[in-house]
Length: 140
Image 1 (cartoon, helix red, strand yellow):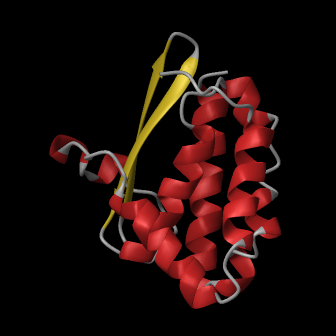
Image 2 (cartoon, one colour; image 1 turned 180 degrees about the horizontal axis):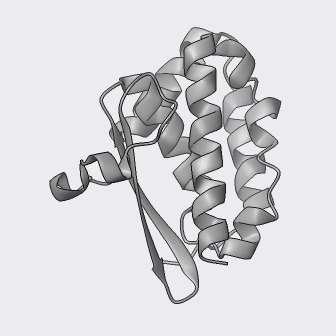
C-alpha cells in the first residue's frame, strides 16, 4: 500500500512522537516497540547478500522495486537496532527513488537519535541510511 503522507509529514509525526518522551530510556522503549511491529522477514533473505555492512549487530535489508516504488523488509538480531531500521522503513517504505534521494534524513538529528546512540550504533545508523540511499540510486 502506497504511503498516504509525504516523507516530510511522516518525519513530522515521528518528531512529534519522540517529543512526547522526556527521557531517552523511554525513547529507547519506543524504538524497541517499533521493532516488534516489523513485518516478518523472510528467512531465505537472511543471507550475506542482504546484510548491511558497517553495523555491529546483524541487520538485513531486502529491497523490492515494484511499480516505481521501493519496498523494504528488514530484521536485526539486536532489539534497539531492529527499532532503528523499523523507524527508517516507516518513513521510506513505498516511496519512489526520487523521493528517497530528495530526503535529507534530518529527522534523525531532530529527534536526537544519533547523538544518543553508542558510537557503534551511530555508525550502524549511518550505514542503514547509506544503504537505503544506495538502493534508491540503483533504482532511479
